[in-house]
Length: 196
Image (cartoon, rainbow, N blue to C red; front, top):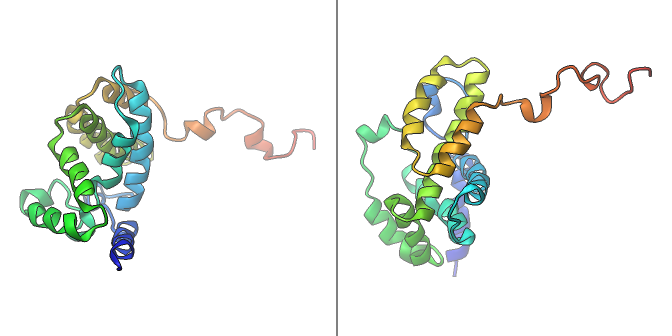
């Protein structure tokens, strides 16, 4: 009787679970939920940039569920993964029966992890690109370590749309969306007109 509520409470952990790579980067912070939220927007863009669009709802489901297991395992960064192994099969077997619509959720997680379908490749590129946006921001505000993380990330991209979006991210200063025209009188006078 509590399966739906249990699942929603489990997902709530992702709102508080910090992405562990930031302790190695030295600056910034992000929860798993924050990462997944921007990923949804990235994959929405990637699908429209792609020469061969895939079923969008399926694609969004891949992103929506891909990090759900981290509520049980925690977030393991690239250093952790050299030493820590997760019993993902046990987790997914239990999830398939304990989560509502568990078999469907598990199928999305497995597809994402296999990276074999065009949709999974777009979703995995979105995973990398979300980190790239974070690294670019950290680089722009002065973290030199962030620049060293970028080349291996770019090598992990598989789709042409992902590579194209990566280039756009790298060429755009992180505040350009709101502060691209620093000579606009607004930044001197605020909301008032210059002669007020």
